[in-house]
Length: 210
Image 1 (cartoon, rainbow, N blue to C red):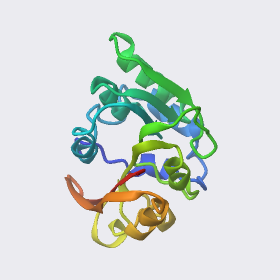
Image 2 (image 1 turned 45 degrees about the vertical axis):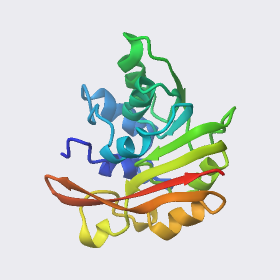
Image 3 (image 1 turned 60 degrees about the vertical axis):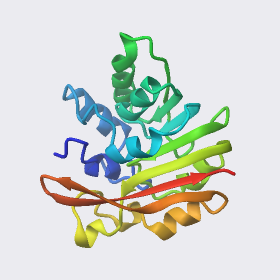
Image 4 (image 1 turned 90 degrees about the vertical axis):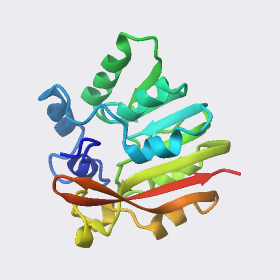
């Protein structure tokens, strides 16, 4: 498994039309069956994009075990982390319980959850859904805030490895451009990751609310 984490099964599990077993109970069971399902380290592309930014209020959608939420909190962000898995959120809480870090952990399905404030950053990392959560997420930005999406590209089905096998759950540049229609796009394109199974093709969007 890629040390940065291969999110293939996690992504499929978070699909909007979830196949049997790919629901919150399924992921609670998986998280509880191991000490750590994914890497504690944040995704390299996420770090590359977010490290230069001035910290503010951040929302991590589909936070899983909280690796990005914890990293953001370490970096000075005030973080809200949302995921439908109680076990995943509990693991995130455990990661910061012995420190002075604070993260607002929320157990909720991101397809229906609504924020109580606007955010300077909305991070959507390896969250692949049939429903258009990205356009909703873009509407939660404060002025000057950024929507950052990192996930598996559709081209993985023909030229890469990893990610869901359902093409509806994979990203394309056109799909992400449409989700950011009311924002200023600062970055949009593919990013290749080397994994033990081969080259995984990700796609990254950074879009700002002007």
